Length: 219
Image (cartoon, rainbow, N blue to C red; front, side, top):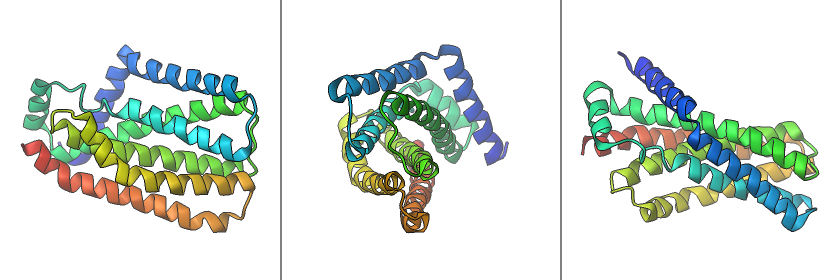
């Protein structure tokens, strides 16, 4: 099979396994909904700045819980089997695509629940939704890459945190600024730079993953 067919097959495999068990996705959904409810009980009403910050904090920890298990759940024997039949690039691409789909689903549900429980203060809902989609893709690409690296170091959670920190902090700052522009209803042309930066981060992260992961996978 060529690379595209391998990626398609691996993504289908991950979706099928998740659909059969539903354990992980249900646990993450419970975490998101319960966290939003706890925030509501703690704050009841918040201003737009706190509303935005709370949302991205919830999404950050939800993405860590959802993506950190990407390679942990794969046994050594299964990884050896994958190594003998597919390209390493197909492995990392399929994980990024699958985690992106999971994050988009989680983000849509979290945003809907968050908007219902808290009063929605958005002046430009479309731009905010774009920032949520870009944030989901960015979280998926960054944490998948880091999860793949840490899995080859004995699934060291400390290593994952250290490697994620230099990338995720600038990413969060850009996302918060972009979403704040959407909340304030500023001109969309003023947010174009933030969108380009997010797209560039995603392209760079995926490119580094494709270059680095085959060497890690070989070991």
